[in-house]
Image (cartoon, rainbow, N blue to C red):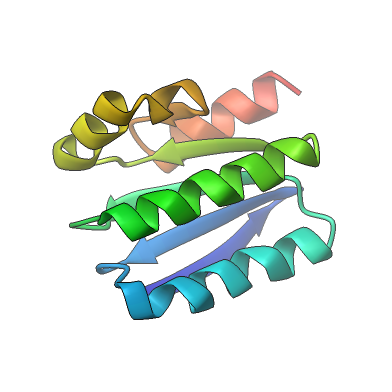
Amino acid sequence: MNIEISKYSNICVVKVIGNIKYDDIDDFDSSINQEIKKGTRDFIFDMKELPYINSAVIGEFVRLIREIHDLHGKVFFCGVRPYLQNILEITGLVNLFQIFPDLPRALEYIQLNK
């Protein structure tokens, strides 16, 4: 797993490359929490290069989403593969954030709805 973090104005884009394994969760969590400590409140998780997700990672996303929402932040996903989209729908997690087909559309939506 690799994580690339970039900023667009006050929005943090987290690009996940490869599978997030159980052993990667702490590093993933630490990367996001560093951005939260810097004051970032709005996050886009770019999932187009995430081929697989397991229940531990889903649990970590739920925890992070709740933490961000508690800080009055917003979470968006983009580039979600059909496999992951199906899991998000089955678990009801699609009700916690919006999903966009790609990063440009997510950024456009956020900029237009400030």
